[in-house]
Length: 109
Image 1 (cartoon, rainbow, N blue to C red):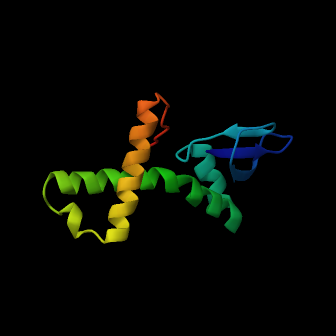
Image 2 (cartoon, rainbow, N blue to C red):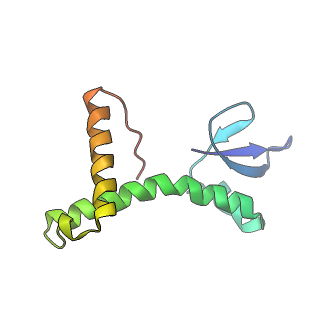
């Protein structure tokens, strides 16, 4: 999750990825204030955190895209490299185990 840190006047001074805590406020990547902040800075670390925060949701998008292409018979699962097949199967098994134990999977698309 992405959080902002603010100065004493309430202005955003940093974007951080991680857990909530004192002085950290969860934010959306699409928030107008965040987009405005990003236009005013030239801080590689903030952009790096932003990119890393979007990685998990992009992984889910790619998984859904692969499932769709397979379902529509555009590609065959067996056409994927064996390493990709193994990773996809491992994630599917993990999701199945999590749902079997009634755990919440926090997917953000």
